[in-house]
Image 1: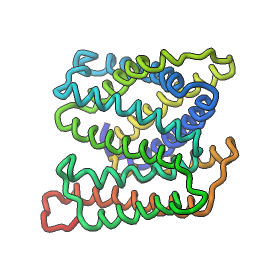
Image 2: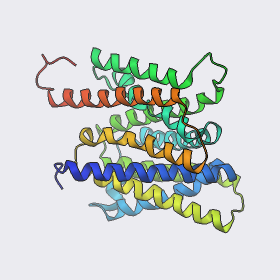
Image 3: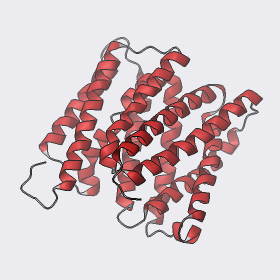
Length: 298
């Protein structure tokens, strides 16, 4: 399917953000009642089954999907992501969905800042300014030095940094491995890694919470499915700005379901971070379309 249906791509990206926001809400509810490792483990069992089934049905089957020229990096990516998810879910508990997502929204800025040393990409002065402005937005969210500043804010910052590194490694391994291979290792290695940790924290779960867990598993798979379809029909640069809507939907869930409060400084800081992030995505798109024009500034 050609990458030319931007309208459908935007619709699918918005659907993806809604699904992932619901997933985050379910994750917070379950992690408040049960151990985080167990919750993420069960979620990954379903996700691992999904990626294995997807790989088996693809051209060449599992034999092709499992072939990688970078096994250590692929395994590290999978383990890095499960660690990041566990930390982010923990952040939902200690500071809430609203502030966690407000801080996490800065990850594209970290990706842009680290793309030079890790990927060897050139980051021009416009994107460096956007990165600086974005981090000012993060400081506005955190308000360091004020009495209300919470040391728990470091938790989503760690998660944000880890996800940025995961994103950069995903781009790095894409130079030699297919997207299908990377996706397979993300789910398969993640399921094995989380089982090795989470099985020791097993707790009995009520029937109602098993229903919530089923919802968590379904949203995880359906969210990734929508994202895959989104990137099949439209270029990533055209739909990526709409990924920031997950912050909006997660905030709505945090406010309406968990009685969280959206403070003014968080709203202002989030707006700055989102604007800076969208600008960096746009500049990267512009640069990629003008690679053959070295005189065009970044």
